[in-house]
Amino acid sequence: MGPSPTFDQFGTSPTPDRGGKGSNPDFRLHITPLHFFFQLRFPIQRKLKLAQVHKQRKAKRKKLFISRVLAMATNTQDQQSQAGRHQEVGHKSLLQSDALYQYILETSVYPREPEPMKELRELTAKHPWNLMTTSADEGQFLNMLLKLINAKNTMEIGVYTGYSLLATALAIPDDGKILAMDVNRENYELGLPVIQKAGVAHKIDFKEGPALPVLDQLVEDVNFNNPIHFFFFRIC
Image (tube, rainbow, N blue to C red; front, side):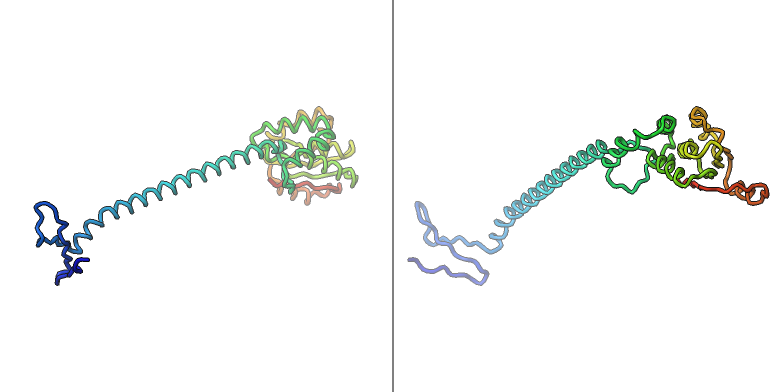
């Protein structure tokens, strides 16, 4: 074994010449720590930069993959929702399943719906404000309730095209009366031909305008002594 290398005061380490032709046995290659620093610095920086770029690309691919999966799941859910979505306008039920509600409509509600009410419902469905209407199941419940209490004189605030009004008129006796109030007579006249064709228009006393003045007038009218058996107030 050769002699151990020595270090000078500047931290240099002599490296013996490897010999060979023309070699100088007294030659020493002095390498300072600064030389090692510059030799190692740039390869390490390049490796770190490449690792950072690779990490960013991997994160970007992962984000893109997740967004595509979520988009596919959303589209599938929307398609399933539309497939099971009920077609009933004016539906305000607490029932959470649209598929179940559609099943109830097709098996129980629509088969029992009177022809005039079906015609008016389909006519109203084409109107831009159709969400204001009473749904078919609510209309049949209203009709049944009026028959159960044997109502004769009723009052309705908020008529729209008259679907609930028609359900009421079909339920009360022929000499019954409905005091109906709405600020928009145009919507009421949209469904009026159907009501007339059903033969119940004579039961309806329609008042155009806000309901409060009409109610105040009824209170002051000493000749008004007909009891109101049922009151229907539409909230849209």
